Length: 276
Image 1: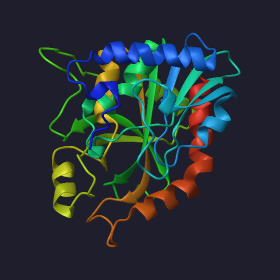
Image 2 (image 1 turned 60 degrees about the vertical axis):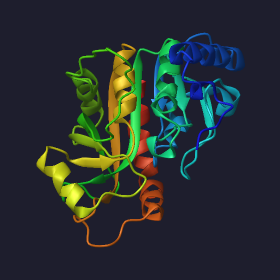
Image 3 (image 1 turned 90 degrees about the vertical axis):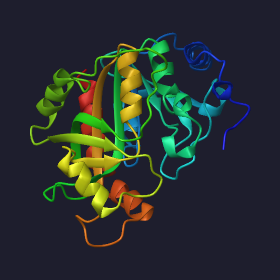
Image 4 (image 1 turned 180 degrees about the vertical axis):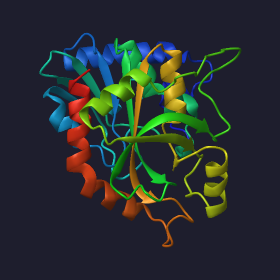
């Protein structure tokens, strides 16, 4: 499943050197030397890019070292440089590589490492996910307070020991709640995918402390912590998880829930970023 033209598919390549090359490509193509904040847009969050500030450059991700076009409907394939009203530079990543695509963890976290190489000190990760708490209806935005990595994999290589205490910044979660005090939070469980979780797997996630289930974010957050970034995570509850809701799950349902919620959650996200 690998794309042999991608430098990250070479096991001898230094992924941080590829990220530095990608950051140089972004600086050259956007005319922006450094960014302050990076934002990865998951399913349902796309319109936020229009509300964050003035877009000064949009580039195809495929023109940047190590990136490729997204494989999933609901995700765009571009990188965007935005100037906020407060003068911050935001790098918007619309080209997420998911673990289930089979390209390896280096490709999954390349966007995060590239964002860090552009100078970004804050990483905002968003996703569309299944909710375990019955009180969370489809369309509900939830802050990620912690995660459980159920992929059996890690972006860390060798004897690289990284502390994951307070991985999802309490400071940034508190900031988000100054924008919307009603925001709830929960523990995100990243499964390998691409199949949706079984009802038994959802119950397992609940028993071990999970509240949200999905197929992204956790590996990216680990890489962001390794890069020294402060992390804010948001999940859009697009459906109730298997066994919590009684109807079958579908990707169409996820897309539709995201489209319905997009105006509200995008405005919320833009205001949170504007306050950073």
